[in-house]
Image (cartoon, rainbow, N blue to C red; front, side, top):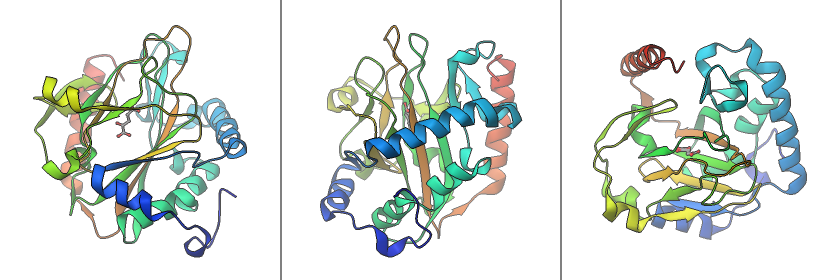
Length: 261
Ligand SMILES: O=C(O)CCC(=O)C(=O)O
C-alpha cells in the first residue's frame, strides 16, 4: 500500500540502507515501488500533466523549449496542487524513509518531476543539493524515483561516493533552467570517481545534502527519462527566507531574459 495515515509503525527499512547512505552519501533501493504502484504513479502523472499543469503558474513548469509542450522537463512543487502527489510526498513510505535516514522528524519541502526528453534533454550540472537549500543546519536529503529504465544513454544520475564527507564545493551559475547552480571546478579527477546509477522503474535513489551528483543529457532518439524527486529537510532546519526570495527572483529574471521561462 502506498499511503498510510499512521506512518511510523508500518514500514521497517533494512539497516544496510542507512549504513550505505551514511558511508557513500547515497543509496539505491531497488523496487522501492512495485510494478502496480509504479503504474499508479505514472497514471496520476499523466493526469497531472493534462489537467493540473494548465492551472499552475508558468514559472513552476519548465520546458527545454517553451514553445514545444512535448519538451516538458521539470515540474516544481507538485504536491501543492494535487491530492495524490501530496499524499505520495507526505503520507507515504517515502516520508517514512526520509525520517529513518535523517534519524529525526522530517518536513517535505519540494516534490518535482524530472524528465529528459529524447535528443534535447539537457545535462544536469554537477552540484550539491545543500547548496541550493539555504537552510541551517544543512540537514536534508533528496529521493529520486525512476519511472522507467534509466542508463548511460538517456542520462543516469552519477554520484561521487563519499563526496558528502568532503564538505561544500564552490558553485556558480550554469544557465541551465532547473539547475541554475553547478560546481565551478568539477574536473577529470571528479569524473573518474563517478558511479552511474542505472535504474529500473520503481527503483529509488536517495542522496544526502552534500553528495555530489550530475547527469548527462539524453542522447537517445526516442526514450524519455522520467523520474520524481522528493526533497525532505530535518524539521529543525530553518530556511533563510530573505536569501531564498532574492535567489529565486534573480534566477527567474535571468531565465526570463534568456527566453527560457
Ligand atoms: O534528474 C536529474 O538529472 C538529477 C536530479 C537531481 O540532481 C536532484 O534530484 O538533486
